Image (cartoon, rainbow, N blue to C red; front, side, top):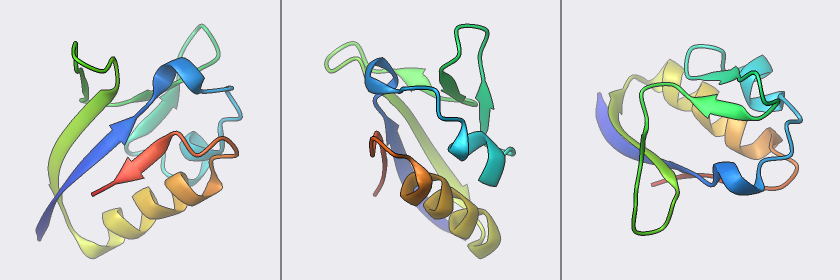
Length: 78
């Protein structure tokens, strides 16, 4: 397994829900209509939500699909 950092700009999320559809293990739609990155913490320096995690190839593929499916490209995987 490899370690990755997922960064999510929740402020700019438009609530398309594509991330939650393709990757429900890591994403869900909150009551306000925006997505939540499960297990992430908000970085007070930039207000992005960040998750440092070790994932297997299947989960990484799913996370990459979520990032690629986002119409406003607010999900980054490093």
